[in-house]
Length: 505
Image (tube, rainbow, N blue to C red; front, side):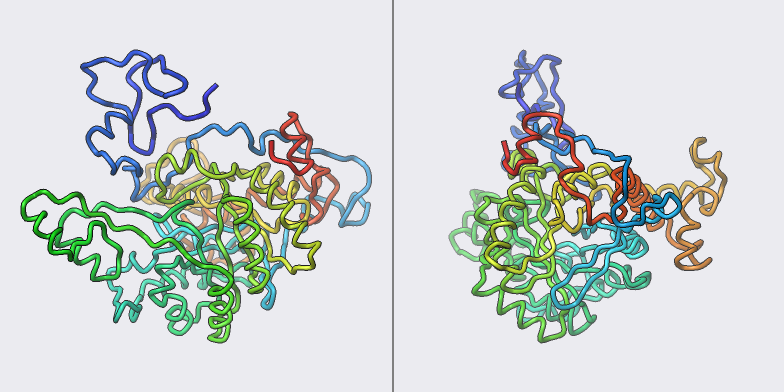
């Protein structure tokens, strides 16, 4: 059977006209001459190269549509009925509410997590509530790459940032609710770094954590964006962007006047980082006051996974997040989101072997976060258990943003008196409808009643994740999440058994 999605996609609002499809190509088995082109081929006939990227970006999230044969559903979760680990074997003490979910990481400056989750990089949609909810839940969150481009008040001098006031709002979205757990991290790709974003963030706003990004968007290569005309292309080039073809070339300008010039595109630079430039760069930023350093990596070739961990160990990086196939939220090419890189469960298995190898060499490794398609507590527990003590946290980006959006929307419906019946039965105010507000008031006092519904939504979603994790821990008589291990997983297939034994089928 083919696991490649058919030539229809939510990325582009395309669909197949026929009900019968050719499994190998994804085309309609019966393709007619009078079709108006509703599928990806029809879209490509009109948009050409631009159809490589999703057309439904903007205020939306994008993720893989491929049905991978390997994922965490290949496991069930084990259970035990005798004894207790991490708590006294006493029925009055070894309860779900005594399960410790806290984790601590950091080479030089420890960071505490209230639960083993981080919210990976995003800087679109409802980012204010995303960051605020992370602080309320006590986890880390990351401001996405390219953040300067979101600020209309951004000012550059000789290619360096001199004013980026929106960054203060982003950092304050978390800091306003900081309760001593988690941290807000500013992500930088190579373009951001070249603009001096780390220095500006540290000096102007006291940023404490930077994440260096390998690759772009959800995963993969750097973005390529269509530019509508020569004037815009010249402006982009003047701002430091790479533009193809070169709009300042007289021959290109002459062709443009004759209407024989090809389309203009801007494209991002690929990071050409390695230990020779990253290690001294990290040292330089630490001398300026930076406390914590993160790396963001995807499911690249295993040699690259090992290389980035060696750099991280040498630079005393605090955490590296690895993003596997099946997740998303960014702006990668459609087929790259569906067809590229290791499925998350395979990537984790490969990483565990690499970590063991580097550990045996005596290297001090960073904390490891696994992300890529996680939405519920069972998935989180399985990934932590498979990590066998080497995985500190699980990244939950799209699901947490969905909670931010849903919470905000419910807040709007409450304000307008238009709640759907199922929610309206609970009451008519934020205090009535949002069931975990008492937990927030226990942390912040009655002022929590005034918190944004979107941020409350993120807190409530992560509170559900935490509560569910406590149940799975107690099910295995393990009252500390750090005790979760491979023995907590039941393989359902031969492929799952191979994954447990350290090999990716």
